[in-house]
Image (cartoon, rainbow, N blue to C red; front, side, top):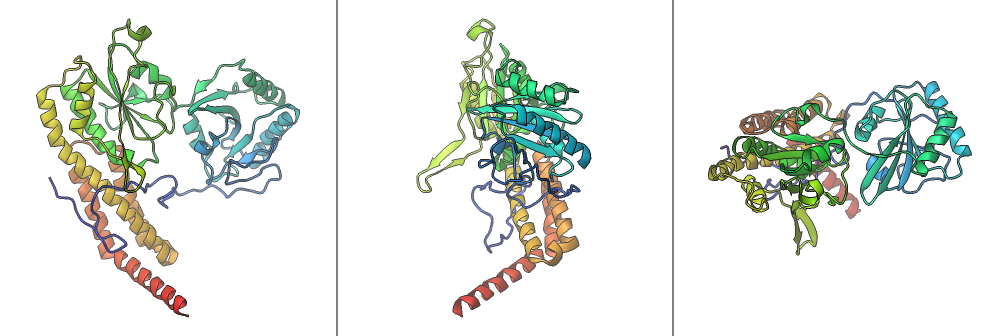
Length: 444
């Protein structure tokens, strides 16, 4: 097992102690963005672009969703309507918008409305379709409701986009004359992770089938793409699924993206991530044929008296085994050699977690280098970004048992690139010059 590598931080210190999990490569916070070929939002008198979804004008004026807006913010509203134009030209998008405006003008109490439009939004409509768990030709309309973290969707029937049908759809949804569905991703092939077949992937539509069946023991891990603690834990959980497939085959190790899928809050009430819930197998006669009311939570939250804040502690492989064995009521048999192997694997899992934490240091270094260098760091900055993204994707999406060497090799390549191109020296020099200039201004 290789020792944890120490790398310099931007403040001249070293990386020590527990991971802070504050930075990520996707979403807000990292500064790394996907290259986008989308045009900036165009001026449109009917659209009111906003970066604050809480303060909105009254209907019927729709709001254009752009990069500053997320679906999570939308769900702060109890009821919203979204019109999605995927791949439409500006002229076609305007026609669908005009149809929506005509319908809103007739409705007595229309819900707040938003537009996701490839012709004017910087975020492709396909991104929102993935989160909504739908696949459709343009245009399509969805109404979302959110009450106590339980989100539901109503999809307008395909091929029925007209003023009259829009009015009917909104009115029927308001009176609950049509049934809702949970938001969720599409069902994966074989219900398993593409890079780790021993890990079961759960989506909204398969939750009852894969997590709540009688006589099946299930450990469910809920995670989010924007949660750094979840991403640092990903290799360890894949390793755990591989271990259980060999030693505890009666335990189903499952994971669910809580940011893109919904479950009943009575079953999984937690609004944070990561979450670990064990659903012990029950005879088909128990609890009306299921076990949704008899799950057990492995609490990862620890309150710090000194900082008065809650921090997350990630469980080890042996702790996960002890947790399911303890709450199985003696039904789930975990052999002793499984605990012994888990202890050995935990060393590699801890190394992979440390590697992810160090990768976040390189993210900060890359961001600082891009800010202080001409042209965002030019070719050197782009190459550094590419190396970081490659290592990030491998850790978060693929790394499992036996992959720590590959991760360290990728970090070695990043370290060599940083050193050969004097990236740290460039950042340090720029930082010192900025501090000197600030001191000079203060003295004046």
